[in-house]
Image 1 (cartoon, one colour):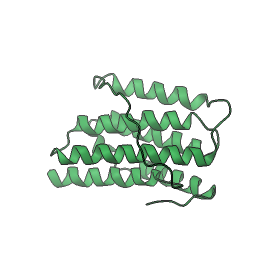
Image 2: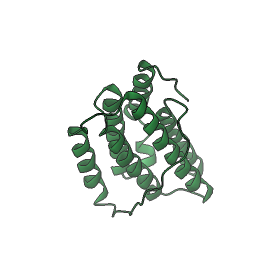
Image 3: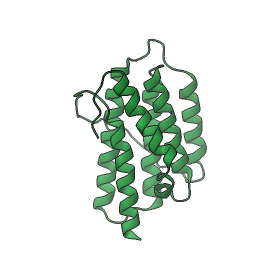
Length: 167
């Protein structure tokens, strides 16, 4: 069982690495406060967050480069969380749910600042993270072709904008 959790963590890490899409941006991460939500409330809160940000990009939209740099920072934060969880032992479904919910919220916030192909790809990726987080076994739910494709779409959108992927 432990090896399957490790495989799940590695898959999530691989998907998140896809987000590390562009530039030599500052590697500093920002610490946000996160309050764990009850399991029953998390899926609807995440869906509401993603829906609200998907429909209303900010005026003066961010460039693709800025979106890619922000996505890279989110990816680095997620990787740090995965490493932290892995170092404490066997990760629980709640651990994966929290990581995926945080990923969705942060990606939705980044996507809300843009309106091009990168923003669209980020919204799709966030939606897939929210779906996986809402599952009974989030780590297993993250192991799906749609989630992987959403990550690849971000890489492709950043690459089309002239940015090198870091995989």
